[in-house]
Length: 469
Figure 1: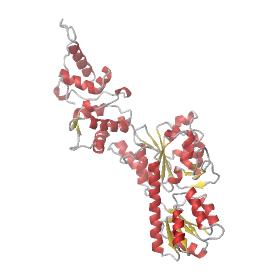
Figure 2: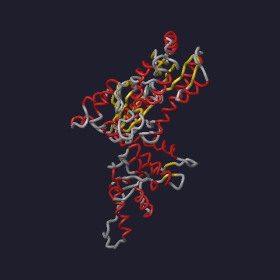
Figure 3: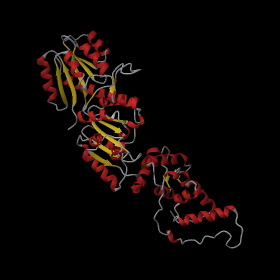
Figure 4: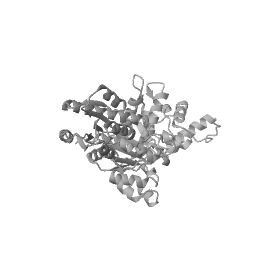
């Protein structure tokens, strides 16, 4: 079942309030609270997050306009629909100027009210999307597709879809660049929370002094330059999913506060005294071994046990190289801006298949994107690839003597008494190292201390015959 939207009805007409509550609750789309005056409404708003507030204008003690002003300061994304018997242009204009979404006169038409609530919910969603774009803590929006047909990836996708139907906390483990946020996004999109926000936060990119404020928000005056109150990401993610990437980098100062939030769903803004409660699903990710971090005292054991209710592991790209051709095609389609579509040669693909990819899928994407730019033809060749072979430990490709080409008898310098030029010596040396490495260009380039592109050009220059790659 889809996540319900939280609605607060504020009106001093008891019969109307209970009627509205019953009507809205019957749809199964709304979870409805009530308040019979403005003071009670403010108390509820200090401890709960609501999507929409239906607010009467004229009430004893604290009127609707005062509640509206409080909402605009404390929870500006909450949408307010004013209800009143005193319908007037002046009242409508004043309430909308203060931030109300719309204005409905009593007695209301039920269908009109439902339509207005639905529009208010959509407006709130747009506000949240805009807020996330303005304050994007995790860089640009990423492609949400997971590409691969290896058994490891197929099993990962299947497990992710299984856990999506639950609200259990999920920990995603994997090296940097393997696509942990893509898995988190897949879980969110396959869950009942799919129509609510997916909020991603990179814990390693935010200083400790700001992390608590970004996560839980702050009150006005909580610290220097806090001129206005601010909603934290846990509030923005209300009803949806909060993704905490690089959770292993959270300091020990913030860890106990995160643990309390995970256990209760409750938090306090920095500088605040009121305890708020939200309903969000937590997915976290790390490239660290949290068991080791906990044993060495850098990560709380109780927080570790709370985070890894369900653990998903993403293998590095070097352990699933059968996915590389699919990934290359995907990135060619994603980054290619020319027509006809650029393709990759067999020689270039061989180099990609034999590289160890210490930067994983992210590194592969960057290499393909760079090759598209550098390639001057419709086919990407080895010289168009820019690989950092110093970071990888390239394995020898397992291949037979290809196409019947026999091991060549390579001339040894001076064995026939002739003096060879430097170019001839270089050619002989390259031939010998290629043969020793089973004709792996990447390994040979690594051993020679040059790039695969330079080696490729020298092979072409000297006319060195190699097995078809």
